[in-house]
Image (cartoon, one colour):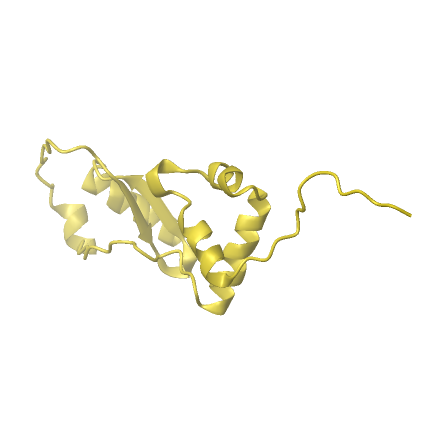
Length: 126
C-alpha cells in the first residue's frame, strides 16, 4: 500500500511564549484578530482560546501595557460646580474606565466631564 500526503500538515505545536507573542500582537498597529490569525495561518478562535488559557495560567493580562491615570471626580462637587471648558489642540484618544462589578466604559477623551459623571452614575446604579 502506498500513501501520499497532499497539502500542508495542519497540526503544529506552539510554546506558551509563541502563543503570548501572537496574542499580544493583536491591536499592535491596528491589527485585528482576523489579520493576526491570517498572518500566522491559524483560526481566529485559536487566538481567543490561547488568550483564555494564558490568562488562566497568569501569563497574560488584558491590562498588560495599559496606562492608568488617577482620576479624582468628587461626586457631590461635580454635580454642583460647572466645569470650565478646556479646548485641547491634541487629537482625542480612547479611554477605558473600569468600574466596580467588572463594568467597563469606553469613551473618547474629549467627553464633557459632566456627561461622564452622569454616565458613571447611571452605570453604577444599573
